[in-house]
Each structure stands twice: as structure tokens, then as C-alpha cells.
Length: 348
Image 1 (cartoon, rainbow, N blue to C red):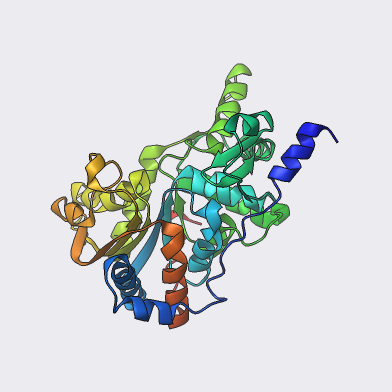
Image 2: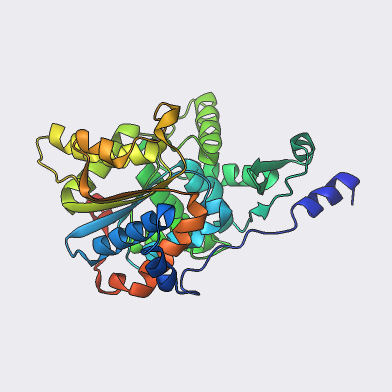
């Protein structure tokens, strides 16, 4: 073993372990936080609103994901939310779905980082860093290549991100998953649509670019991602769902995309209900020019979110998502929820 490969093995030594919300009961903590102040009380109210959404038989809760919390240890929280019928649709960044969830479904891991290591040394060892988390770049390129293989197997035509991710879930469920029970595979099996409105801003983008370049060079037609179809399909879900709730981790494109479905429905001549329940967990605020940080109250001015049951939680998401998830799991409102299976809207 070379000195470089030996160092890489040392750096990629401590794997990130994902939280299991069923293994601990966060209800006493949430109950205590409800009697406190600051972010603790905000967190308790967010948990209460999420439980209200789950108890509301007319409500369809959606999971909105931005940032790197999946790589940081919350991956199974989101997976279990789908598995337990807490979530009917997902809107996320491509990185959350591909570089993190699909990546681990292929059998790869995320690793706890040593903050003292020079990033140039990481580059020399083909290691990518997300704050204090490492990813093996060679494994990530294998993920790119797998996306290429899936793209090459499909009919050359436009696909919404939801449709392509459904194909990824199908591929995993056909015996190709090295790690069973990923978010993508669970969503495929449960009929929960996943949308990534900026899908190519991820590991998938590299595989899809190579697919198009190779097909074009050979004079062959190729598949592509239809972003307009994403918007149309999620708006179709909003119209079909009626009452909706948003569980938002981070902000950015996924947040705005999900909220905009109410406005889009109105443009289509449908009087869609504003999102009735809304929680956003973020560290961003409006001092940066509202970059990814417009508040839920502001969204009310656009006709997107009702402000009766909304809560901003200004906290780093990995510290509070496991608490809210465990609280909802153990209170058990999900046990009487019927899965919406919105994939049926698209013939799946």
C-alpha cells in the first residue's frame, strides 16, 4: 500500500452513523422545551404543528430538503418519515437525493472529518469535504457512472426529475441496491414522488452530461430533464392533495418550488388552498438580503403559506430534526394516516 493510499484509509476511517428515531423517545424533551424560551420553544411548537398536520385527515405533508443533513446523519430520519406514512411527496436538492442517499444505496459511506487536515491534502487523496464530513471522490464518480448507465437504458425523451428518480428507485429495487431501504427505494416502493427542481446540480449532472455528449457524438437521440414538467407535476399533486403541510429543512430552490405550487395552480385557474401547515428549520436570516431566508410570514403575502400554523426554527437542522422526527414517531398520529400514493397520478 502506498503512503497516499494509506493516508486516505486513515482519513476515511470513522463512518457517519444515521440517527434512528424509533430507538429513543423525544417526547419528554419536546414537552420540556414547550415550557422554555428561544429556539427550544420554537422547536416544540414546530413539533406540535407537524403532529397537527399528521392528525389532520385532510392534510398531505411534504418533506422539503436543502443542505447536507442527509450526509450528516439524518438520512434515516427522512427515510423513516416516508416509511411511516408521515410524508406524501419530497422536494429536495439533487445532492440530497443523489450524492447522499443514492450514493449510500450503492454501498458507499460518508465519513466524519478531521478539521485539522489541509484541503489540498484532501484533494491529493481524492477526498471531498462537506464541512466536517468526507466523501470518497472515486466512489462519487462511480455514482456518476451509475447514473449514466440508467440514462443509457431509458427511451431518449424528456423526463421530469420525478420520473427519472422513479427509474432510479426501480433500478435499486430490482436487486441492485447494496444498502436496502434508501430514501429513493422507499419512495419508489411507497409511491411517494421525489422532485429535484435543480437535479443536474448534483452527481447526477455529470452522468447525464456524459450521456448526452456520447449520444450526440454518435448521432443518436438522448434523454434530458424537463424542469417545466417538474413544476407542472408538483402543481398537479398540490391540486389533488387539497390541504397540505410543509416540513422544510433549509431553504433555497426546494422551498420556493414547493411554495410556488399554490400560485401556479391559481395561474391554471384552480383556487388551490395555501399550504396550511409550515415549518422551516434554517440558520439563514434576512440580513443577507433574504438569500434562501424569506420567512414563512413573508410567503403569506404571495398567497403561498397560511400563517395560522407556521413556525420558523433558527437552528442547525441536525440538532432538532431528530427530536421532531422522534416526537412524531412516538406520538403515533402516522399510524392512522392513509398513504396518498401520488405516484398513481402519473401512472406509476
